[in-house]
Length: 368
Image (tube, rainbow, N blue to C red; front, top):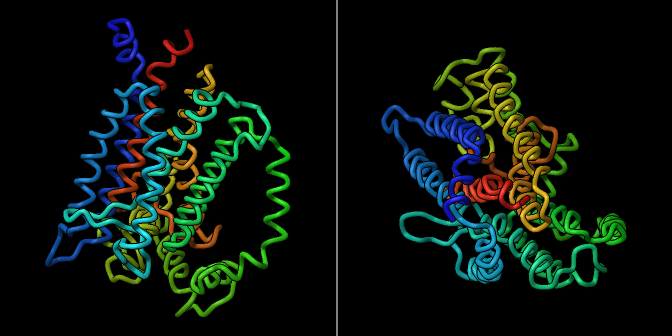
């Protein structure tokens, strides 16, 4: 045990931890800026996010110390429990901005759908590699995983939360592909999706259809296109060096909706300009490239598959959010990991990255 502990300390990924801490600190600064008011400089959102980041770092360390084999057993059971929480949320969940996504704990609200990001990879790996050993098997063997994935995706979609549902389904299917699910399944699934597009369109909420129409260039700039137009103005008006912290007009004058959550990257662009945005993008790029490079160094299939499943939703959410803010993708309501306000997504992101670090710190032991 002492040898394992020595290797763990030696191979702990301090560089990734530093990058994560820097990005989270920048996010905290811009949550402060996005919610600043002269009469209340430290808003309740900033205070909650400060608590979320500090507790998130603690969660990161706790997950880093956790043996991935224990995480598989706990995660397998926890994923089933989360599906139960999604059902409870649909029945008695807290409502906000027309959506029923949260469970009120009194001191804060939690979003159960966020926890799927950490528990579903454990569910897949435990079932595929330990319980049944079905890697590279017939697609029918994966049905006990595919059915719960689609069930949880539909429950999240009913909240409604299209953005989170997309990330969960995309991440889950990519992880299943890495687990050996046949190419035929994805080809048939893609063809079915294309043919079912007219039917799926009728199931979307009016505002979801509107967002797609806006992405295609339709809508009035003062109504349907207001949110994305204000985001573009914020991004473009920052120039090269930005207007300075608390000096962004789109932000401080409340022209930019959801500046503390989905559009926090627009706040950053307005106040720090192209150079500030480039710096943050560089931090994310270095972090993700480093994580992917480390992932390739894990030889055993179970920890490698778990590590991949943990970082896919973080990377996907980052790419979708920034593309959404820049007008490259429709607005689907996905927060920017480590930066956007939100206790549940902050905790989940730190937990995913912490457990990933646990696997990486032990990779030399795992690889023999």
